[in-house]
Image (cartoon, rainbow, N blue to C red; front, side, top):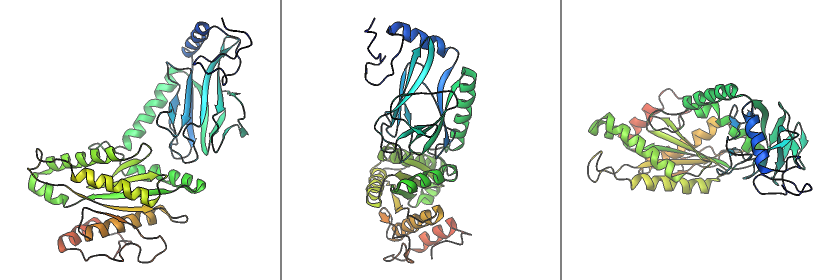
Length: 356
């Protein structure tokens, strides 16, 4: 038994967990285990880019940290969220399971029902919790509720995934990107995009067949995954085109990431699947969103930069020019060859905003 005047922390940090009447660790764990048989605490995002995401407390933990870091039990990819933003701790008081939240010195603070968290606060079922700009709802859920909500979340996630590459599909751009853009705009944090296109991909399909072409698409997706940061979002944008959304990355950082991807693809060995010495390359266009720029305008600038990379000889990274410049991509464009021009016209057929 511990000193009655000592704040018990089941994980060993005595300074941060509220006082509990249960001072025996084994008894505390038994109470939490028994209570979990009836309900489990959970947090659900009800506002922001990750709307609908459910975080149920792990079965084997009495503490969970929410933050932007991938090491957090509840990771939130939002610029207003600190790397380790807040801590949720389960505790037993008078034999009843309670959950407390405390802020971990975050930049943008934690609130419960619109009141700033200055010290550990006990949560009630239905409480609204703000982690930076991300609105969450605290819930006590039984196992059936959690299974249902988790199943719905997996279905939503699957609908946003490309079946071949495992990357997000273009639906992610429609469903999630607007919230991400709004969050970065509110917090004045840079947000960039890199558009990638596999060079002469039609030749791969025509020469080696569509099965091998699918293998190239998967290999390029793997190269993209190997080069991006934890918070970055890789999307199969359509056909042989990919995009990477780069939270917190100004244009020059995005350029370096695009260059890493370009080199990784070029150095990949396709001898077994295609033929010895066959090299696959990508062209990349990079743009950082402007303060008053719409998402279509932003993506168009990146697409124009991609077109300039294609026109300039392929296998290169080009930066988009400033949003307000009328010649926003092609100051030094080299006229494309007929094959490239035909490919580009086909890809943008019927698009009234196609760059000239």
